[in-house]
Amino acid sequence: MKKIKRIDVHMKPKRILFLFSFIIRTAAYFARKKEKATIKKIGKMPKPPYLLLSNHSSFMDIYLGLGATSPHRSYWVCAAEEFVDKYFVCVHSGIMPKRRFVNDPRSLLSMKEALLKRKKILVMYPEAVYSFVGKPLRIDEGLGKLVKYLKVPVVFLNCHGSYLRQPQWSDQHVREVPITAEMECILSKSDINELSAEDIQKTIKSHFDSDEEEYQLQNHIKIDYPHRAEGLERVLYQCPHCGKEFHMSSSRETLSCDACRVKYRLNEDGTLSCLSDHPRFTKVSEWFAWEKENVEKEVRDGTYHFEDDVIMEKMEGVKVGFVPLKGRHHLIHDIDNGITVEGPSGVVFHREPLQSFGLHIDYNYKGNGEIIDLSSPDETYFARPLSKKKWLTKIRFAVEAIYNLKKEEIKEKAT
Image (spheres, rainbow, N blue to C red):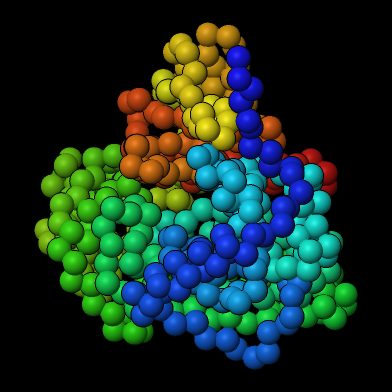
């Protein structure tokens, strides 16, 4: 039997081949030109090596990152599953695989190799997933310590318009939106030597303050795309009028509750109007934040619980990709035990509540439906819910809420 080549997330970064780098940067150039994207550099940029951090809303941010780092060849931290069927190109284009929301100290060695031995730029998207509603997501609490360890300048790339152009809740629809980015050195080498890891963390976090709704309003961007609200129920899953969950549906520019029949319109300027009642929310992000608060309350009240039968797929190798596991599998997510998946052979996957504050979900991964990304230091699984497919956003909220609760309980015990 031919041996399956697995994706090694701990491999040392390979030499970047000029041809691959040139082709990718050229393709990115034409993608930016097509969208009339602009990148503004604020102040003087350090010479490589340095760490480039960026916010992240869609694949367009990759094109912006390539433009920001050109003409230099750079290394990129990327989700391990993206190496399937593209291993050789990825490896020799400077792409370094990592499993999402997994604390793995071994990956630090690869980062250090790329920066300090190969003297290149290292590009990271610390939020690890696309922004859900154009607002910043939580970044890892250890990022300041990482920067202190790497001891290289930090440059921040702030991208605007990527979410508005192609929100992940409706990535099959692309809108015409101006794309811009600002690039600025936010931490020099001397800053990193003088500041504590905590102060470095605060500095980085303060730059993840992008707000796509405000960007749209301030720049008077009108999105008249007729299907602009389709898919919005994926993130706005709870009706603010009757309170029922998973009864929302969308069509063209409207979002409706199938239970109480209330209807909202996503306006051309990105605001919301209620067509059948007084509006509870006028912004998508406000509605989204309200749902998150409701999940946090469920967690603190001890009432949150999710379980469903799932199709489990395991990432086996470079050419094989994801392979469905045999037998019936059942996923349970609760406050005390975190995420557990059991199958015919017993526990297939388990993650304790404090192992990670985040979770990668995708509403239509590569056009093949909903997935929950379950990763450990050595394996990557996709769980596909069978009857509760609309729960993905709520599960994502709950993972973070449970993590926060358990952290607080530890602090209370220590005092």
